[in-house]
Amino acid sequence: MTASGKKPLLIIIGLVLAAALYFFTQQPKFVDVEIITLEQGEVRATVSNTRVGTVKACRRAYLAPATGGQVAVLHVNEGDSVKQNQLLLEIWNKDLKAQVKLQDAQIRANRASAEQVCQLGAGAEREADRVLRLQKFNNIISEEQVDIKATGARAKRASCTAALEAIAVSQANRDAAQAAVERTLIVAPFDGTVAEINAELGEFITPSPPGIPTLPAIDLLDVSCLYVSAPIDEVDAPQIKTGMSACVSLDAFGDKRCSGTVSRIAPYVLEKEKQARTVEVEVKLTDPKDLDGLLPGYSADIEVLLDRKAAALRVPAEAVLENNRVLLMRPDGLLEERSFKPGLADWNIVEVLSGLNAGDKVVLSVGREGVAAGVYAREQR
Image (cartoon, rainbow, N blue to C red; front, side):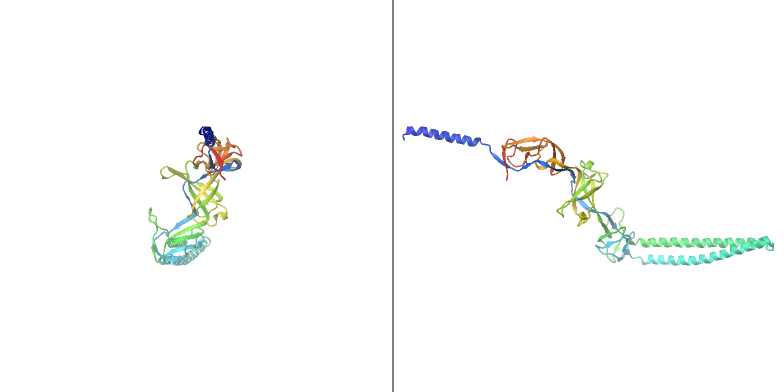
């Protein structure tokens, strides 16, 4: 083939290559995306705490004696279960107990003395009555003798009254001595478990001075009743009402415990940190299975159920863009933006009231590079 014959062939090949290059450069580029097909299911509106909460005992008492002294007897050990009014700790009080015994003896002596005086008084009254009758019927007893007998009877009756009052005084003294003894004792105010003992035999302990907290001699917990206290943002708090259902999540356990109910909402707002004002909300667990394994002090989160629907069109929260927008994938792979009207929502799911339909394919991986409206995409397998 001559040079002149080769030239048209080269031109044709160049045109074919140019056409192929143009064809391939004009083909849309596909990005891989995660897709979810919209369908109906349960949707819930919930509120969660802003900072970590804490498992607490419904009753907890930091116990210390009402008076200082040397620890004479420790009746319990850490971890012991105790009953209400059970004696836990005793300060040295032999002198005070001796005072109680002394007052008991004084009461017995006063009663015996009162018995004697009152018997004499009763006899004097009977004798005065006999003398008065003799004076009235026989007139052989003078008025003076009658008056003497009557006065003596009244005096002895007064002595009887004084002796009875002396018993009351000695009983009051005994009560005061017993109260002094009780100030040296620590008794359980309720059924519970001894969590901690901060006293040793022979150690001198004192009650906390006003305004200066010190370690309690005994820390008593009622672990039969536990609740979670957690801070809720002030914006979310007005939606919560006592009696609402709630779930509790704990770092120490994997599963949620959903037998909780809101038992208390603090009547004030905490201002522990700037621009982070919260309301303390308490959730009490009622199912014994949910209480199993819990200990006061565990960190916990609460999720309060505001409302729920058993069947509603829903979209994952991770697929929702700002201003309630999502990316839909058309059958040809083109991504387009679509707005929708939201309903109930939590951290995971948003209800769709309008704007989307069941069966729509929504992009989950909206944060992936290259994913945007107008781009062609293919579902990642």
